[in-house]
Image (cartoon, rainbow, N blue to C red; front, side, top):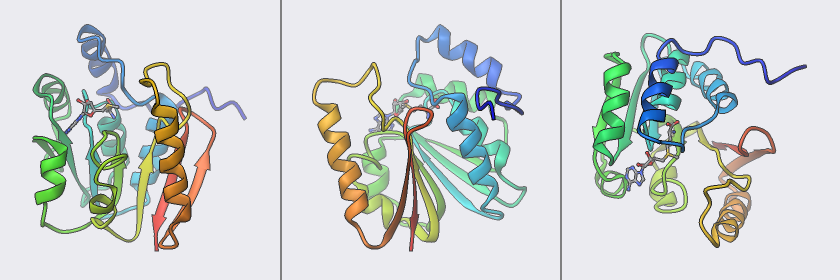
Length: 191
Ligand SMILES: C[S@@+](CC[C@H](N)C(=O)[O-])C[C@H]1O[C@@H](n2cnc3c(N)ncnc32)[C@H](O)[C@@H]1O
């Protein structure tokens, strides 16, 4: 099996990648993670999906490509320049782009819970984890990437990542699988 062959890349991908390169935005999720997100999004028909940290929308495009017609996605980003690239290129009424601070959004959100959360920003991952996991339905998926050392990790981030992984593993309301693949993925299901 050759996992470097990634098929069915979303149509929006090329334009978003070009715009990301122009903005020197280099924090995008990789193709393998994108493919996994698409597959897992498809496992939630009529699902309510949440992405924290839209960036320029590369992962968003993959998630949307996996969603069925009755699914919806809320995606939250605090950088206007980045989210505008996503909004411009992903023209889809199932997607709500929210330009706001993820900390504030997580503290104030009081709508319906979600079936799938891709947490790709500090809020929702290393910060406000409890608030985030409380937004997940039973049987819902919580997915994170970048759990293997990354070139852009600041000093001390390795210890933070280690502690977070342990925190997830110690909880008895969560089922956790770690993948030493792509940038290091954790797939978590809430009981
Ligand atoms: C790792 S990048 C996400 C990349 C994205 N998944 C993609 O594939 O393009 C993290 C994103 O979180 C955003 N972010 C950082 N702090 C935030 C906050 N407090 N609220 C909302 N978004 C935040 C950053 O601007 C950045 O775009």
